Length: 191
Image (tube, rainbow, N blue to C red):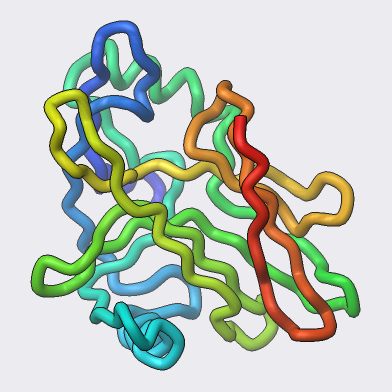
């Protein structure tokens, strides 16, 4: 994203909750996240997700300006978390493979899935190693809505990095690399 880029996800903070739990509406216009274009990602999904394949129409890497508050209080809280929010994690897998994990936002075509996702690539070749959309949750009104926020945290121990849907709850999903199978996998450790 460019400096001073326009936000893609618009947030309305709910009373007594954190900004990432607020009501969100998105307008994703980008066509790539690094070397991964919507076509390359759609082809990957078609080849690897045989029972639930879809085409991606828009894709953007998350950055400090992705989320915009629709009121001053929400924007102030978002700004307060920018310093402790990470959207990318670079790591070296066992065997020396250089890995990049990115938090991205995307929209599938024709009412396909949308929201935040983890995109893991080989930094040298751009090969997609993992695509993991965060899915939906049920809001206070009982509606299924996309999860739009996923944070990344740097390597701790044997993992490549970890992901979390909140900054303070302790929820973590650790991302690992299996050198034998040349496969990126995840283990959720809960809250």
